[in-house]
Image 1 (cartoon, rainbow, N blue to C red):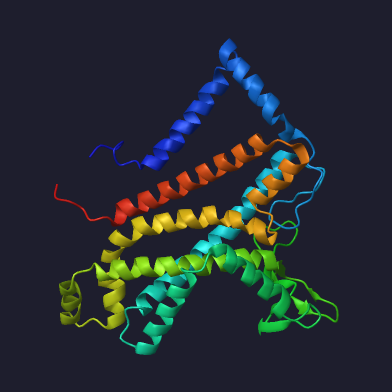
Image 2: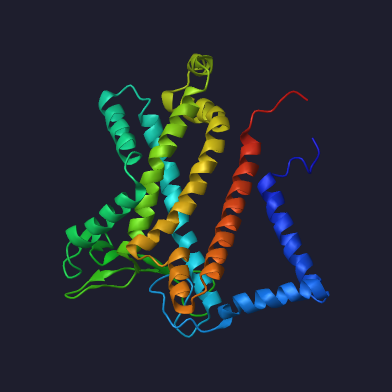
Length: 328
């Protein structure tokens, strides 16, 4: 197989997209192409204007004096900030649930089945709203937070947890900033808002139900003789699963898991319903401020397209490593 044939189609799409954009930029002096660039500059020139609104949270600092372009960048960072931990939670929890559905322990199998059948049959938006109202109404006030672990405080104001701090002039964090509960609030550490917790937990728990079925099907696809051979070698059940069953099941799991990760990233757009300032939320605010509906929606579509192609390309590369090799 040639090297070009081994490159995933998603990566080829990204390369072609980048090549077309680069060619249009290099040929911008050509009359026809120049008029296209002029039209694009006129349509998307608002991105350089001050946004006039703030973004409550995120890793990329932003205030009302920054441009719309930086606002979209902050929204993209917030989308990734929520999608990555949600994906990790979905894969880890889904794997455990999928294994639990195949265990011989009746109670564990029943609980895992109940979880999967409940969450995957209730719309995600409904789950996000229910989770958000639970976090903001059922938890105690910020003046009386619940201590989950040493330094971990949970309340209606969100979750406060220890966070590494880098001293001035240092390259790496040198200590942890521990939150402390005061008479009025929790101070110090890092604070995760209820909106952020809602979207991370909601996406992670919902997608985990589908990942569990994928893992269960993948484990079921491994021939029984492989398990018997592992037993004959004296392997313990945990070793059989880790060294024999799961490596072979990945060939079935990874393609379907890719689809679920793509759905998770695209479902993060539902965060607008709970007020988390991700990409779609920023686009809605920008649209209302500028009236540029087509342009704002086009930016959102382009960003999600690039994100999806990047995830698909990365997963296809991993899938090529675990796929069954044919005879050569």
